[in-house]
Length: 126
Image 1 (tube, one colour):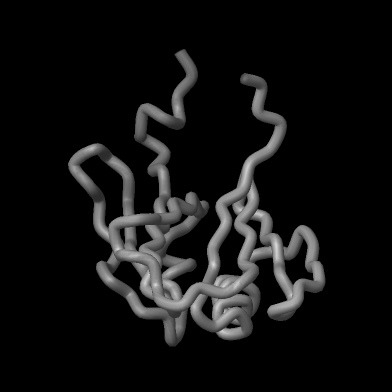
Image 2 (image 1 turned 135 degrees about the vertical axis):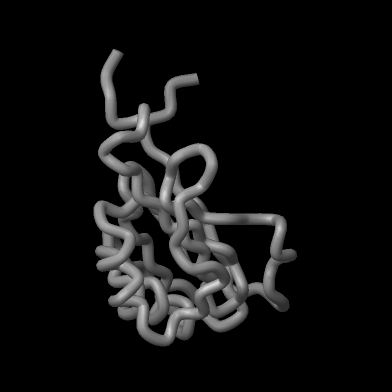
C-alpha cells in the first residue's frame, strides 16, 4: 500500500467549540474548510498529516480510544501559550528521552505534546 496522505477524523460533541480549540487555542493552521449539514468542517495541518474536525458525536469518545501526538520545537514555550487548556500532565522528560506534556481537547481527547531533545537518538542520522 502506498499512502500519499493521511488524516485523523474527530467527530466532536460540539463542533464549534472543538474547531475553536484547535484553531484559536492550539493555533493549528487550516488546510481547508468545508460546509456540511451540521456546520463547517475544518481540516488542520498537523505536521506531516491532517486533523479533520467535522460532524457530530452524541458523546465524547472513550478516553482510551484515540490520542493525538504532536511534536513541537520548544515544549516550555508551547506550555506558556496554552492558557486555559486542560493540562493532564506538565512537561517532563520520559525514560525514553522525550519531553512530553499531556493535554485534553474539549471532549477529553488526550493530546501528547512532545519535544525531541537535541541529544535524543531520533535527532541523529546513522
